[in-house]
Image (cartoon, rainbow, N blue to C red):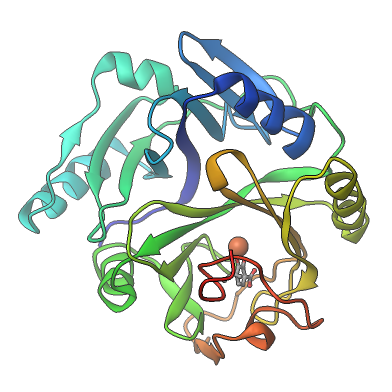
Length: 288
Ligand SMILES: CC(C)c1ccc(C(=O)O)c(O)c1O
Ligand SMILES: [Fe+2]
């Protein structure tokens, strides 16, 4: 079993790095951690970085998860290799760019590009967002899945993810106590469906809702409250159609192994306790 300890960063391609930087800083509220040729790294918490926009195809998305030791990384590589995943080791130059000691890259069964990394750098400097969005950190990622049952099996039997809840057949999976770190959404492609940052309070959700509306950033869902994690949320559209989510108050699950995953309806009431309807194709067919 491959033990993932946390999600670490997303890397997202863009053909317009300048606009991506403007969005990440002035709208989303991240801080520039580092600018290199053709890429910008952003901080959202005490880690070196949790998001990177790089010059490239906007459909190129990478998500990294941390493993505890180099020995676990070697064992994970062997397991994935035996299962037929094409595993590549990151070169020293690629490790340096990512600020990690070592990593492997492979595709999940849908084709999502995944990196397993060890020893990500922490930042010696506290995060100060370019605007006060109240961000406390990068928290979870939603992946498109061409077969959610198959991919749930991958994340829960090859890796240590556990299903906390399902909305329709879409699982919300935890790798620690936080209700979910990985969500899967039925779709006919691979890629990141949404990137979540936690914010401090309701106050931040409401303030951002007004700010985004004033700046004409499309709000695609919320403010609302998830019946699943009980978090209050706000979804909005970023560069190249990427969905970003702020949420606050996500519950934790501490009664392992007694917790039983719950079933919620794949319809607006399964997504929001307050009656908001998503304008996001992955959550409501053809509405985006
Ligand atoms: C709307 C998506 C499917 C979703 C649903 C529930 C939660 C949660 O319980 O926090 C999410 O974070 C989501 O992104
Ligand atoms: Fe989410």
